[in-house]
Image: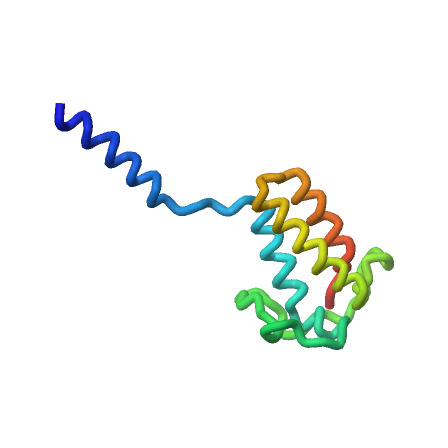
Length: 119
């Protein structure tokens, strides 16, 4: 009888200690935030991001952005677009926390379009 009580209690405690899994939308948010805090965004906006520019710290990262134009001329990044993207990120975070995955993903699509192709 005692074993029957211990096992469910152990499972409850194990479930409480399990890490929270990030949603795909929260992963997109983190990725776009890194882009908006990059030196490429700083070059477009003329302002250093809060906390200073970030780095991907990827061994595959280029030392500097290639000197090419985006294939879609409408994808060119602007200071206004970066600012709008930051506002959309805030909205997406609220949607993600509320569990509105579809709304969050739609907002993230808009944020990516507004951010454009950052150098």
